[in-house]
Image (tube, rainbow, N blue to C red):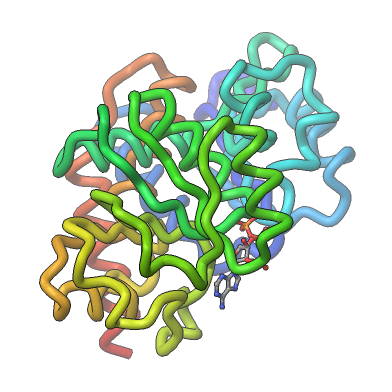
Length: 274
Ligand code: ATR
């Protein structure tokens, strides 16, 4: 523990080498004039790592793949949304008591609201994994109507039942009437940028298509959707807003969202040129 040094924040994941979170967080703390460091840790033993939060006096931790679900059992308390979603992406160290939060759904909702209403709209949510759970929670909490679309029916049905919404097999997307499609699968994420979870001809009838993937900035799904005449939204905004919410939880201050977005976008554009 530093006695009068900077506040320490951390990222727990495996791998973490390519994460843009350190860049985004440092940009925010610099602009907010907060003395803080944000350290990425490639975690081997999660239980030991969580013990280190208390032992070292780390103020807050971002949690990423593959630990968002597993980390819950090592914490003292779970905030309601993280409990319902079954995933923690943020830990707050409150004087040695570790509380788990989920800011992914908040990031999604904040970004979506910048460009479309949620209340009363129907959303086809593609995928039935951990990411889908956060998206379903977000849509439902804002009065939207989600329909789970999944390749494997059994998995999709269980998820839809748990969240009290409809299920449709992905192969039957042709019959779906929805205002927006949200991709929560990792299909199309770098380096597999040529892949898309949907064929271009399935897309044209949906007014909006959203991808929660932020690398690449425009996935094949979004490129196809744009060509098919849909309005599109990439995952960059959700990524930045989930990080901004972490900073609010850790500092009780308003982070510079636009600067955070600018610096992450610039880095992703550099990746695309190389
Ligand atoms: P996460 O927890 O990160 O969301 P996951 O649990 O591996 O990831 O979930 C991945 C989701 O993407 C699953 O719903 C999966 O569908 P299946 O249940 O049928 O496996 C979906 N998915 C993966 N590859 C896909 C593809 N090529 N087309 C459509 N859906 C796909």
